[in-house]
Length: 78
Image (cartoon, rainbow, N blue to C red):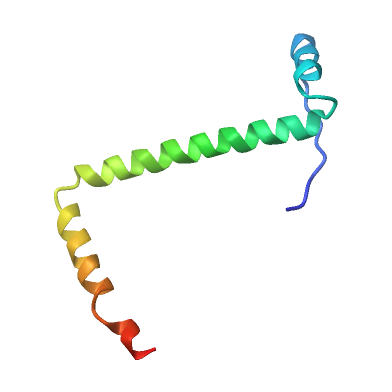
């Protein structure tokens, strides 16, 4: 994955904190924080989407239909 250099403006107290916890590599630390945060956001979005699907009264029938399609033996020809 390629990297891109950016400029950000932070409060002085946050820069001091960042220097304390980053172990000398601000970019690496911030990169890891953003990866973790992105995973949390995506997980929350996935859970919300699944919860929305569960509210759909037709969802169980759709699942059953997909299970039937998945088990129709189409892979048996390979």
